Image (cartoon, rainbow, N blue to C red; front, top):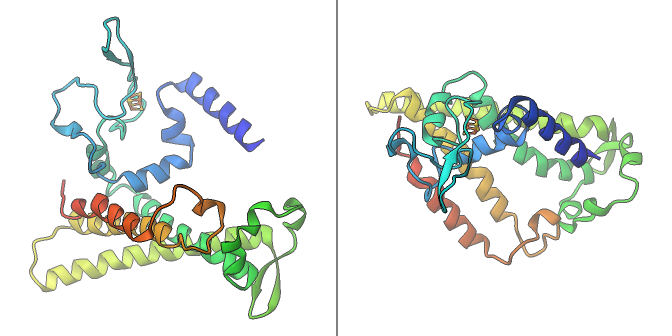
Length: 255
Ligand code: SF4
């Protein structure tokens, strides 16, 4: 039902407003894309060095009359647009209100997502067994105790406990990220390093982008039977190295 409503919502929004208005303004996954894209992908094209009017990156387009020809269908639904020039969009939004909350809150959300399973079941086996993905009568358990800590069920309904934990961890992630920025700014000042506010924020943003990815790869242990860990066979170490190669080159970039 949720999927059908999402598809209908996307069709209605795009019919009314065009472009990728659904992705940019309504869909929560737009925020996830913002967090993970950063300035751009390591192998992505450099849109900011292309001539004006070029069709760049994932810009909206259609096929032209000639074979292999492409034509822009951009209606300027967002400016600057992540799909046209991800680097320009990244630096433009770096200091906008709410941008820190999205970046650092997401880091907290990822940690809170895993921690809640521990708080709910009292041990990590519930998460790693993947039992939660095929539990019967999930709706019927929404009002049952949502925490089980130190052998005691705590009488806060699951319906409240889960969002409470996620919101709490998102808040912690935000506090941690903003404190780390402050700490680094003072550190650079003490050591007379010419690193401006944007560069500091960028470094912490990239770390906050990198950590959830590494966390995701590292938790793919041999006992992890959860659906999120199922996929092509891979080695956590190689996944982590791959992620480092994608993220680390961008730590030193600047506007
Ligand atoms: S390319 Fe143009 S129409 Fe497509 S999402 Fe970006 S601004 Fe909107």
